[in-house]
Image (tube, rainbow, N blue to C red):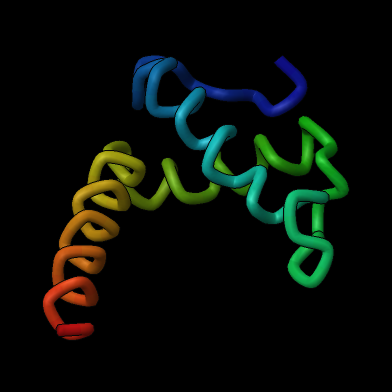
Length: 76
């Protein structure tokens, strides 16, 4: 409610995945900590991405898989 999310524009699972992914900007890595694991700040980052593309986190997952495959092949 605090973020004013319009759930008809993307589904709850995308937002939940976004929250999990965007915690990388928290205390998990102190060098990139911008949210300090604050749920509102983390939610705003996820929401910003979902406002760009409602399937942002599906696409991010696909891109990360492709990148892992590429770099695994490049290391040999």
